[in-house]
Amino acid sequence: MRKINFPFSAILGQDKMKMGLILNVIDPQIGGLLLTGHQGTGKSTAVRSLVELMPQIEVIKGCVFACDLNSDIDNLCQKCREKRKQGQVETEKRHMRLVNLPLGCTELFSDLLKIQ
Image (cartoon, rainbow, N blue to C red; front, side):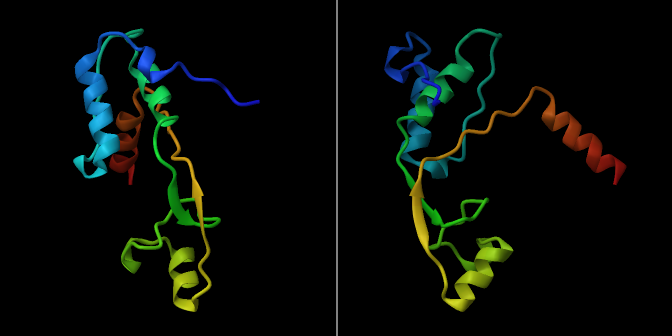
């Protein structure tokens, strides 16, 4: 059963946050948006609701990294590079995925780098 998200158009206030999110959908080369604020201010709700409005993307079929066929070969994962060299590439359209990162995940990553 698919979970229904709160509609993006129903979010009141938070105009700068909504504008930043919309601009990132329009032009992904902006490079993202860092949302900060107290718990319960609608950060996660806004992002989850926006995913429903985003256009589908064309990716190499079966790729877990969502490689883009039109990318330089250096930007493809190993499996997609091999498929492309052999000329056996199929594509599919799918919705963009939302990845929720837990609080403190960047600190954990930097600690892991120090260990290595």
